[in-house]
Length: 208
Image (cartoon, rainbow, N blue to C red; front, side, top):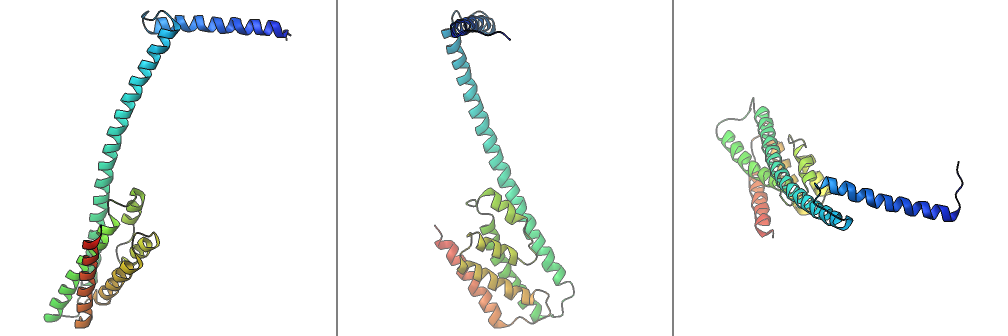
């Protein structure tokens, strides 16, 4: 190990600094094909190239972000369609062997039409562009065989007000009561489902 005095250390440090500057000029000169003559010019050229590179990166990132947004919307749409298909399949399986017939089936179908409109309003809330992408993805993965879990989760997350959540849940409860087609649809329940649908539509129209 070699011991250096403070003076020798300073001198050696200065020598290394000067040598580094010389080497930097040589390397820069070779890198830029001999177009730069000094360290200042090399630094200016480096800044220019870095700026051009940064601009290119920003353009690329903007393009990637746009493509990701398009993909996110496409995935959200697929998730929404898959959820509705799952719900429709569950409804069809529930009525595979109906115990009502004639006018009673017609009443059931009318109730189902009202429920499907309510369901579509709920799906629109769960797939709103205003939602965070991660929440939309989480909602799209939730079981649609009852919709109760989705309503509860969206209410807990603050995406559905208590009033809206109660209306969606009440409509769901009415539908589940008659879903399997074993009961004759009571007029009072049909009217209530219609009223809930009208109220939810009105709230949607009033939303900013």
